[in-house]
Length: 84
Image 1 (cartoon, rainbow, N blue to C red):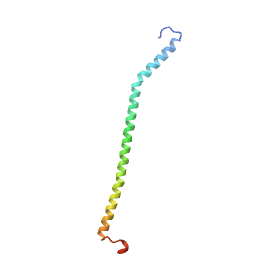
Image 2 (cartoon, rainbow, N blue to C red):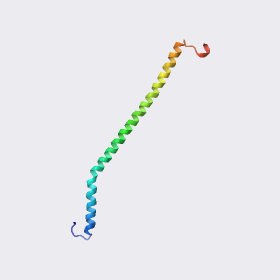
Image 3 (spheres, rainbow, N blue to C red):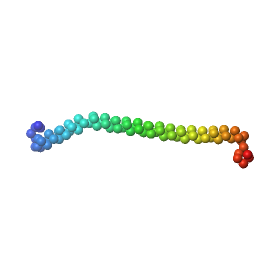
Image 4 (cartoon, rainbow, N blue to C red):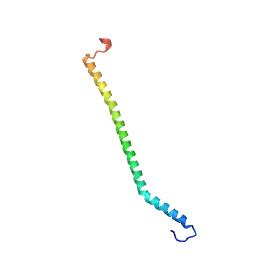
């Protein structure tokens, strides 16, 4: 119990207990925020890598179709449809 003060001792005890509780929970809350931040950073990195992979797949498809078109043009002797 708190010393005799003009404030009711039950009130001072309640405030003291609340302060102790807050100080006791602070490290756990700090670690929780750290873990959430880490998880968010990792998820953003994975999203960026998936986006880059998708962009590279589009470039690969464009290169493949261009190469196939050139192969077909070479095999037909460079003639277009109207020249055949």
